Length: 274
Image 1 (cartoon, rainbow, N blue to C red):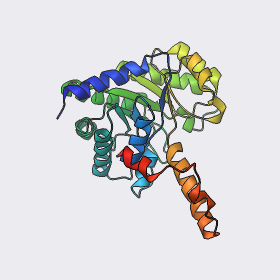
Image 2 (cartoon, rainbow, N blue to C red):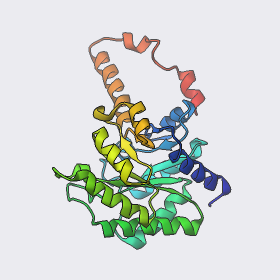
Image 3 (cartoon, rainbow, N blue to C red):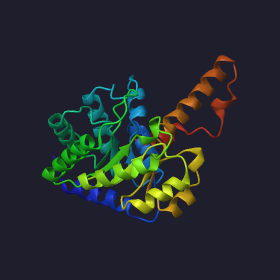
Image 4 (cartoon, one colour):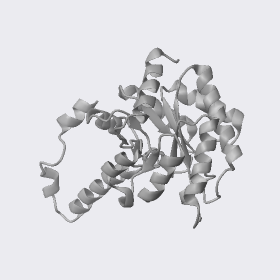
């Protein structure tokens, strides 16, 4: 059921994209990780599709059953007081009627934003601009019907394709088309240099989301360029598993000092997150 609180969260999330301050998203995958990120003071929560899938025993790429995804999102939404946006991949369908149904179910979880990507997945290239615009139009239509002004983050997979030239021109073309279809932000995932980010900023009025890479890792510079939003994808779960792997390998080698380290969070700290 849609309530005023969800509408207010959607409006808040939209406003966060229009601020001069970067919207930093430390992507989560479950209730505990969401509570941690919210407790640390992040103003919004974003999921990562890879992290959501892997933590539930599935590979990334819409392999997690749709009902499992909805349940996980609902638990995250109910665990925090801040806006939640969902990495919705390709919408778990290419059928427009079914996409509308999926969007309605996603909005019912309480989520107020989503990523929708134009890649076909599995190295099969991109949907045409017209095909992706129809998806975005359908998403916006459902949001309007339900009176929830969700933030549509239009991800374009141009930089995942084997293009050598004119990548930013292709991104600009898609960004402007997606905006006309109802998108609220553009996400050229894996854009890897400040020059092209600056060019994109000059050629679109859409808020820009970038994926954090070492080559564009200066957050102050991104902020000065006018980037609105920075995502880290599966980096948070990668970091968590890296630490767990180190601890486990140490245990196998009879090395236990890390288990008593003052750097480890306490059980009391974890209890307070729930």
